Amino acid sequence: MNPIELIDVTGDDGRVTEAAWLARAEAAHRELREFAEPYETVMRRIFAGGGRMRIAVRGSDVLAVAVWRSFEKTVSGRHLYVDDLVTRAAARSSGVGAALLRSLEATARALGCRKLELDSGSHRTRAHAFYLRERMEITGFHFVKRLG
Image (cartoon, rainbow, N blue to C red; front, top):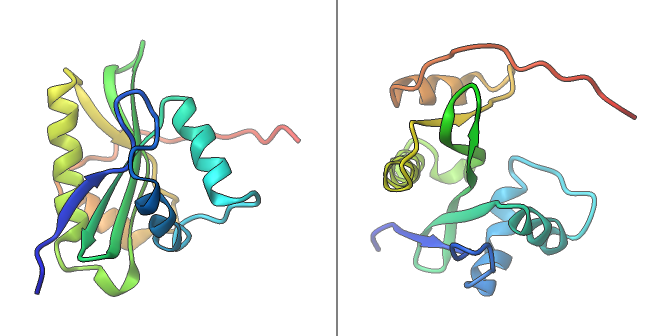
């Protein structure tokens, strides 16, 4: 079996450097998110706003997708925030998600971040168990007010 390879789909400037991989990432990403507009359109807008993408692949198969960004907030200082972390259902519990998360942690350290943060829907109990196993902690509530 081929080893897992981690690929950055975007460069430090947010430009897509691996367009073929971006297209292949869509099916995995859609296991977590629905997109009302064409996938590439949405993702290029996310990248232009500071988002980055890293994928875990085996051969030509995308097994997991992470979308992340690094910025500074008054409450947490410089941190790496994970917008999305999804492992394809068929690849879950195989170490792929953990490898991708560890790579994001290494990136956060390299960028001088004090924390790696993410939000997870309250109904995603299997994801919560994974994050707790990975030594992440639940530190608060996330509140939302819909505006339209």
